[in-house]
Image 1 (cartoon, helix red, strand yellow):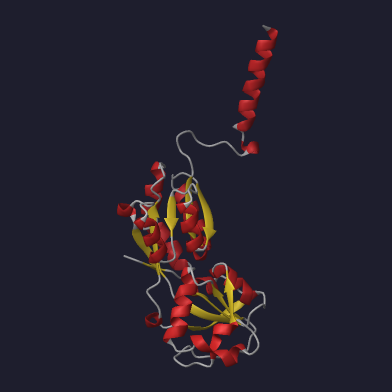
Image 2: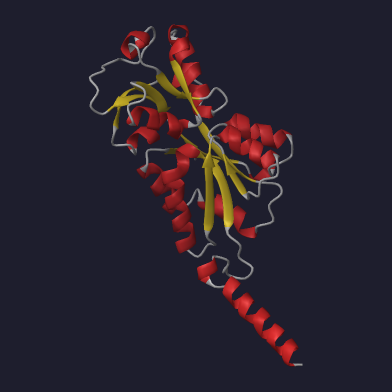
Length: 261
């Protein structure tokens, strides 16, 4: 009898410990956090939007940021996401064709601009236009750009091709895992120039914008959001709705995004 009491007491103590904040497992019953897989370029803005959602009575939001291409494949492989926010329509289409998102929940949330950047103390001056001497401006350096499957990389290569300069720098590209990695290449002095989103350049004090690429030189930059089909989190749909709320809109605009109406 004494041994049984000790076992019950031990189990009770263990349960209490596992539920405590010290062990990181405590959460409000019936309100699991919303897990959002999102494009790397959204990190600063979405972190703030998620905090506002929770402060307003919503459940906590957990974010995982990476290239949209990598995230889409993670979801395809069964990663436990509730919401996907992509930096282009193609990777959202990729999941929709495989019935891995809830098509009816899909919404275009934001747009962006594409920027050519250099280090803040660089003397490079270049007008972003057709036939610009981009190769000469690079000298012996490389052009930081996200990989060809990453939305920012696709937009950037499309712009370079449209402006007639892609061939001249094809052997000078420094492909990065995602757009924030391309930003870091320039900020850290590993590349003299880079192609990132306007919003990325705004949050990095070590770079400056040389010029913006014409919107007509690449496909429209669109950020769609959707529920992941495998999710059973009732708060996930509320979070997608919150992305269009006045509080979220104010945050997105603060970081330089244009909100889709």
